[in-house]
Image 1 (tube, rainbow, N blue to C red):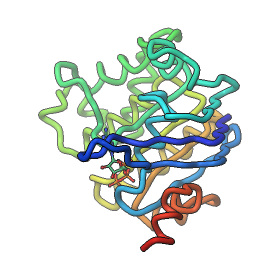
Image 2: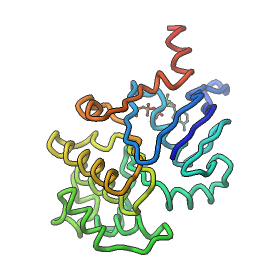
Image 3: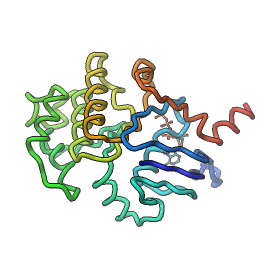
Length: 227
Ligand SMILES: Nc1ncnc2c1ncn2[C@@H]1O[C@H](COP(=O)(O)OP(=O)(O)OP(=O)(O)O)[C@@H](O)[C@H]1O
């Protein structure tokens, strides 16, 4: 489902040079596999997820998702491919403020080829415990409620690959577990591969495969060697 080879990414540093962030020789995720990436703050987890989603381009290397090398696509092509094949739960939710919770989930569907399934949108919001908040606007919702809408929106489209960047960072332990359960059950039922970033060890330890990014990433290994 996901096959990464020789992926490199750097950012411009304040002195005008380049700051290497990622050098990942290989990283693969099988169809319908569920796995977790862990690692210290700033080690490049969100950058890796962005590149997999086609938000920004690597300096070099290949990212194959569902059989297509997305690093060769134009920005428009990557946007379209993401809408059709991937779901993304952003650390910052990225909900559209002018639309209600229900509309945000429905909009997650209408950017892709699939038909808009209003019943599925309602069902997903019910599963995250927000049946009573369908018509609420994001600014009137708590941070945890917004996070749950973001999870429902990412699943709305029946993606093949779900990328979740700390989807439980802002919720209490009970909601944390219900979000993890919702994500994992839906991914299992619908054979969606899951790559989740988390700092919560009690979440990570529920997964069979937990990859520390430092192990996958030669930049982190070189830093460690020089530390
Ligand atoms: N657009 C950018 N321009 C310059 N530097 C960036 C940019 N985006 C990220 N970085 C840097 O790249 C590094 C990795 O950032 P990233 O957000 O991927 O880390 P992370 O592992 O997800 O951290 P956290 O766990 O705190 O969310 C950081 O040092 C960050 O400052």
